[in-house]
Amino acid sequence: MAIQIGAIVVVTVFMITSAAPSAIAAPAPAPTAAPTIPGTINPLSIPKWVNQITGPPPVYTPTVITDANDNVLSHEYTVEMTTGTQQILPAPLPTTPVWWYQGQAHDAVTGADLGVVGNSPGATFEAVRGIPVDVTWVNNINVPQPFAVDPTLHWADPNNLGMVMAPFPPYPPGYPQAQSNVPLVTHLHGAEVQSTSDGGPIAWWTASGTHGSSYYTEKPTAANAAVYHYPNAQIPTTLWYHDHALGITRLNVMSGLAGFYLLRDPADTIAPLLPSGQYEVPLAIQDRTFNTDGSLWFPSVGINPTIHPYWFPEFFGNTIMVNGLVWPNINVDQGQYMFRLLDGSNARFYTLWMGNGMPMTVIGSDGGYYKAPVVTTKLTIAPGERYVILLDFSGMAAGTKVVMMNNAKTPYPGGSPTQGATTGQVMQFTVTANPGFAPQVLPAALNPTLVGAWPTLPTPTKTRILTLYEDAGPLGPLAAYLNGQMWDAPISESPTLGSTEDWQIVDMTMDAHPIHTHLVQFQLVSRQKVDTMAYQTAWLALNGAPPYMMTPTELSWTPYIKGKSIPATPIEQAWKDTIQVLPGEVTTFRIRFAPNDGSAEFPFDATVGPGYVWHCHILDHEDNEMMRPYIVLPAV
Image 1 (spheres, rainbow, N blue to C red):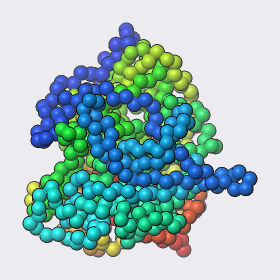
Image 2 (image 1 turned 90 degrees about the horizontal axis):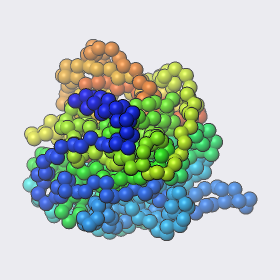
Image 3 (image 1 turned 135 degrees about the vertical axis):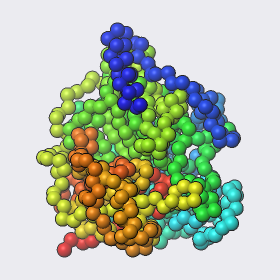
Image 4 (image 1 turned 180 degrees about the horizontal axis):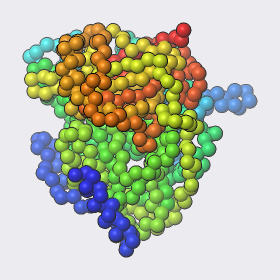
C-alpha cells in the first residue's frame, strides 16, 4: 500500500508541477479515531503547522583553551541536566514539564549570545576535528522520575532497592525508592572515544553524588558531575548525545535528555558546496503523547504486569515532535537546504517522503558522507540513526506548502499502519518569496575513506553469528535478548584492537531492530532471507531456551537460506553505527576495531576502562536485556 500511495503522489506532482507549481500541497488524510487513553489529549484536536522552527537550534558556547601563542588546545563546556517547562504543544495549549540539557549558548546563525539556554532537545555542540572537547556534565535533577521505574529489570538502582518481588504496587506511586535520586549518564552516540568517557550504562551518577560502578571523571569535579573527554579525531559527521543509564534510558530520554553534536573538519572539501548557516538545519524527530495538562504520558502498566509491573515493550506516541515542537512548520527560501535528520524516538521507525513527491538527495549518515550521493523519494530511518539530506525548493512558487509524511508501520515493518492525520505527518515546509542557496554540483565520490569496491574494509579475520530473540511471556514479550544472553552474562565479544570482523545477526523476532555499536562505525555487507522459524527450532534444540549466562553455541544459518543474498544497495553504502536488522533475515556487517578514517590506531587506548556496549536502539528493548557489554583486547 505504501508503494502505491507513493506512486500516486509522484504522478500527481508531475501533473501539478507542470501546470501550477504554487498548487503543490500535501495529501489530505482522512480523520482517524480519537485516542483511547483516558486523560490524554486527542491528537486530532492539536492544530498543525502553528509551531514554527525558525532555524537551527542554539549552539553551546565553549571556553576556548589556548597556549602562549594563541593556538587552540581544546574547548571546554559545562552542561547541566536539569528541569524546565517548555511550549511543545502549540499555544494556547498547556506547556510541558521536561528534563533538559542547559548551558551557555549562542545563536547558530548570527552568533548572538543567548545566555544560559535550557531546552529539549538540548543545544547543539559545534565541534572541530582535531580540537578536543571536555564537557563537565552536571546532574541537577532533584525531582523524582516522572515515569514508572521498573525495578524488576537490570537497572542502575542508586538507592540499593534490590530486586523486588510480586505483588507489585500500581504506579503511582510505584516504588518511591526507585523514583528518586535519579541516575544519569550522557553518551555521545557515534563518537570514537575511550570507554572511560563513553557514558556507559553503569557509569551513572546522581544529584546527591551517588556513583555507578564504572563512574569516571577525566578531571576532578563535584560529586554530582563528571568530566568527559572527546578527542574529535574522527571524520566529520552528525553525532548526538543522550542519556544512557542502565534500565531507565527509555525514561530519561522520554523526559527530554537528548541533543545534536556536529563534528566539522576545516579541511572538508565537500562542505563549501553545501547549504550552511540558516540553510543547514538539524531535525530531531520524536513521537510523544500528552496528558490534558500538557505533561508527557508514558505507559505505567507492563504487558506482563505480574512479572515486570511497569515495563512495556515499545512506546509509540500519537503525535510527532520535531526539535521540541509538535507538528511544526518551517519557512524555507527558494533554494536548497541541508537537513540533518535524527530519529530520536524510543521505538518508532519513520519512512519519510515529501507530500509532493520531491526527491531527497542523501549525502550522509551516522559516520560521515556517503560513498556517493543517492537520490530517493523515500527514506526509512530507525531510532538512533542519522541521515543528511538535501531538499531543493528552487523554482517553487511563494506560498507553496509541502508536508513531510511518514508511513512506517509500528512496530516496523509488519505492525499497524500510521494514522494519516496524525502520525502519518511529520512537519510542513512553507516556501517564501526569498531567494535561497543555489544548489551546487557535487562530486560523484563524496568520501575518500570509502574508495573502492564495497565493502571497502579489509577481509575479516573472524566471523560471529549472533541472534536476536524475544522471550514470550504470558501476555506478550517478556524480554528481548542479544544472542540469548542477559545483560550481566560474562563478556563474550572481545575483539582485538585493529582487527576486522563480520557480525552476522539472525533476527528471529517479528520486528526490525536498530543494532548500535559503541566506539566503532561499520559497513553493511549483505542481507539474506532465511527460514527463521526452522533456524530458531534448531538453535533452541542446540542451546536450550534463553536466557543464558554463558555464550551459546553458534549455529550456521546457511542451511536455512531463502533466495539470494542481497548486497548493500547504494543507499546503504555509508559508515554506520546503527543498522536496521530486519525480521526473517541475516544482516551481515563488517567492523574494523580502529578509526574509520583508515588510521591504524585511535588517539586513545580503546583497551582501557570498563569497555563498551552493543545493543538494540529501541530504548524499551535496551532497558530489558537487549544490550551486551564488550571489550577491546590489545593487539598481539
